[in-house]
Length: 355
Length: 198
Ligand code: HEM
Image (cartoon, rainbow over all chains, first blue to last red; front, top):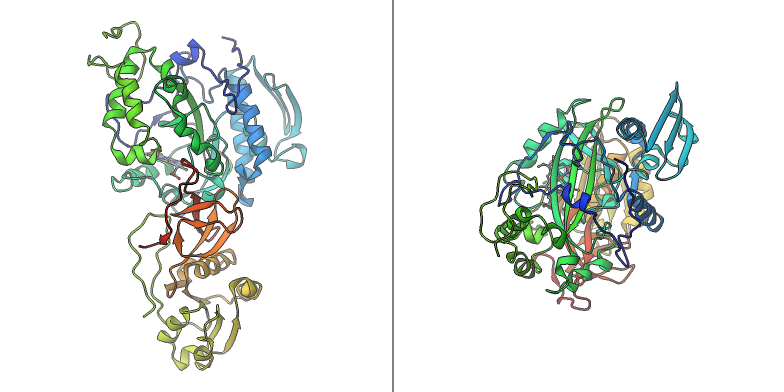
């Protein structure tokens, strides 16, 4: 299908919206009525037609506006994109991976023409047509990682692999769930995960790292993570928390359905060919509570998950103070009926709300 | 004694050790303030004959006792900032097998550690021992300014003036802990400052 790109904002007047298409393909992260951290990883080998899992790098109706938002974040704070000196080759690897994937998966939107090391890249939605020499930085307006991730939705961390660990040595991070690339750059897998509660004790990070170290080229993996965001704000950075933190207190029982968003990250993992680095794209999807409630199964389930979530997780994710108001709202969409296993909306087979 | 038992913490927070005299031809010891006591505790005439001491006094008078150990080379500077160029130079000239000893506050050990690692000293050749003040070197996540020797939580950022709370999340690259606005969700509601470990 051709994508109609929304003209929308993720700040100030927050004109962001999801079409019905986007709501139905939203990556709802809960496959059952409760949630706890786990090593929830699977192969990233496509998914149902039209789902966010289908392509290697999903492009949706928010693409153009998200890239505009990223450019604004970078203009305010260039430290959101950093690459330690030894990571340039990995940046070229990433540029190649994204250009090849997007031009193959969305031939009507992106074209890549290669003649030896002379490459021409056409990005129709953003109106870009650039010719450059592969592996020659002087022929691009930015470093290779920055160049291509200014044209790709989601954050990107590039991890150098050495000493049986992963090191966050480069990244483009403007749509993060409250963590700082500038602070974490150079850390290893256990250090940057240090603030996460409970998961270390459960041995999750030791097992997850082992899995990641063994990811092979051509066999990417994926997982979902989620949190909560008031207003469809992409840049929930610690850098700007002194400005956006106060927005959490603007929720009321009247506006919560429109303002409170479930924020889901589709995280994928690809081995890069020349550098042997691992790239970790973190694609953020936002959906308001009121839009989620149009799917009866999701309404029932979200209420149960949020109600039973351990306090440590609600605190870490930053919504413990708003949880009572969320539950008041969500309980109206839970009639106590059982829900089917799995994340899919199943609007045709699940009964409508019996309240 | 100037020692302190740090409570268990998260995995980015450094864990400090206890200095031990090691074998080797070349030894470099960097200490600030009460860190001098950790050097004195392991000093022998034989070790000192092969040791370069860099001492950052921060207004203390431990320098005399260190000089009296008769090290092969001795330098005393008033602050870390005043001494850092010299520290870099000494690491540049480091011989293979150099043993590095860092003692004193977290801020000085963290910064000297960063210089050592950048100069290619293997971390197995670096020992540490915390002594003296438990103050922290803090980076404001908002303005990126560093505030040295922070003793209370919350504290005021020396650069942008925001009231910040003291996290345990630590960056070795910055040699600093992270400070985050404490009243971000309730402007003006700043708790009474207390000692970091109170
Ligand atoms: C190598 C790729 C990865 C990177 C770069 C990465 C990065 C991060 C970062 C920066 C955070 C925020 C920590 C903070 O509070 O400051 C985080 C949180 C977390 N990560 Fe990862 N991560 C990676 C892979 C994984 C994997 C494979 C797992 C599998 C279990 C995982 C599980 C988690 C969990 C459970 C959280 C807490 C999230 C929440 O509750 O909202 N991460 N990760």
